[in-house]
Image (cartoon, rainbow, N blue to C red; front, side):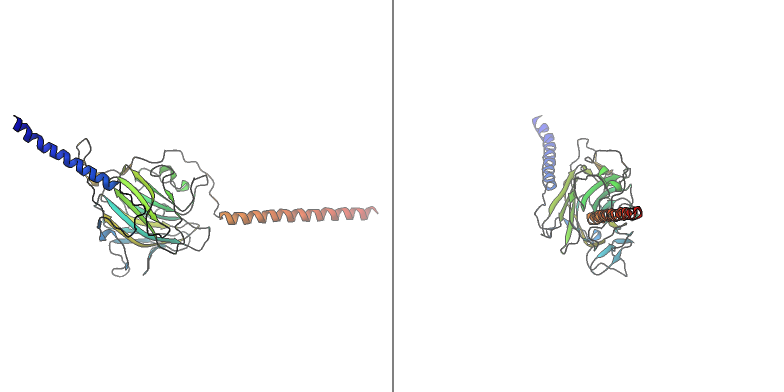
Amino acid sequence: MYLLSHHLFLPFFAHYLSLRVKKANGQQQQRIQLSDTSVDEWRGYFRKEHSLAKPYQGNGMSIPYWDIQGTTIVTAQHVRLTADIQSAQGGIWNNVPVNARDWELHVNFAIHGSTGDLFGDGAAIWYVQDPGQAGPIFGSKNYFRGLGIFLDTYSNHNGPHGHGHPYISAMVNNGSLFYDHDMDGTHTQLGGEHTGCEAKFRNKQHQTQLLIRYVGDVLSIYTDILGTGQWKECMSVDGVQLPTGYYFGITAATGDLSDYHDIISVRMFEQEFAHVQDGTGVTVDPRQREPYAQNVAAPRDHIDQPPASKLGWIGTTVLVILGGALCVLVLWFGVIFVNHRQQMSKKRFY
């Protein structure tokens, strides 16, 4: 009896130990901190079919594995999504679905222009079910299914934000949520209204880079904006559920204000992570997972407000000075006119 129970128990105990080891190894990888590590240190397996690097062109103006959209043009130095002109939309979309459940995406980009304080609107990096659909959200459609990372260069929100722009934030959508551009997406922001980071990436003479890491249902974003060659954490949120089989893309848009939006390179690395079944013992096909985020901004009503001034603080200051000077001029002419009338009255009296 002892031998029988012993032989029955050992396989279950061994399986339990293997799950514990896998879970511990997975949690260790999940908690990797990349702050202050080199931007040239790559992890995982490089996936060429999801990557973009010089030289870009294949046959003619096509790019292998990528589709071009809108105002995008391909040069020897970069893929330009928009020029520094008003009302432009451009994008590039990877045409190979992502079968990796865990991944890192390295994006080398440049956003620049010659308009001083007046610039916009920004760019977005996507992992979505339906690629290549133009729309109002930095050149892509609203009510998307998947993940959006927003590099917002202009504040459409007229009220207090608690942060400046450019600003990096994220959103997970199952197709039912509306990205409120007027409120800069704060109503649906991943991790809460204040989860994200201010990033002064415009008009840099050095490379500006972004790392998006999705491993073990944890989404982390790192940046190298200062050109130090080291990553700095922007945000990290757990409880993020994304299916496989979606597509990467990068889009940009300009409105009344404009900027150049350039992509230098995109590199995707598949990551190893030991996923352990939950307590139900039910195995879910990663392709059938519903896009979901456990931590999002608290829902609140949209409040219409007048559009923010596109003059910037310099333009507003100039208008105030001109207005004051005009008031002084009107007052001066008024005094002269009154004195003249008084003198004419005295002459008639005598």
